[in-house]
Image (cartoon, rainbow, N blue to C red; front, side, top):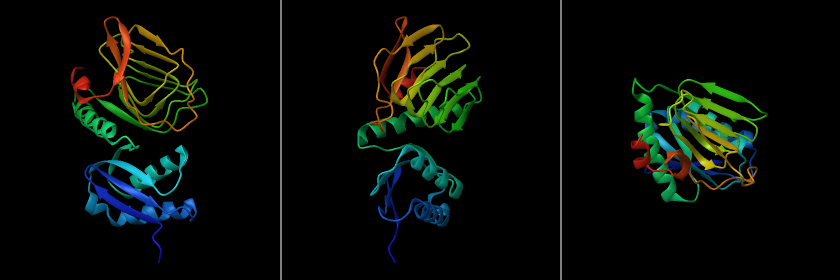
Length: 223
């Protein structure tokens, strides 16, 4: 019998080899079965996920992430692209973030889903968003913002007036940013509808203005 899903493990991640011909519903059922059967093997590991063999849109990727989450204790921190070195740096930086959010003095929360249709999400805590922020939509946090997807709308960190906060996104192409009282407006038009290359960046205040730089563990440790 042909396997519609083959799971391959590697250091800090798993790759799903997906059949290109079967229905997507069959794929989800097979993924649910295999991760359920492997729950004890994977445990609560923090992993990056890569998928090959089949073209997937963002909605299908999120459905696969939800299926894995519902049928295992694995913590998928990002979907890996082709730039392996960038992805490794991103995972290291997220390790540092995880420690910061686990600190009782810096509580955080997770939100699974994409902000669109002019949706606004506001919180007093640091927040990790598993999804995109579409143009016209907005995320507001009194502390830090991490977006495991594309930032194409607006993001406001440091809503308590502090400039010592940051915004991280896998694809940094915002309409507007604000950190504390410092503002940034993107004047470059971005083809946000296209599936982005994974290029995680961090936005923070430096020398009296907001700058964006490639995300590193060292930059996060500086906050």
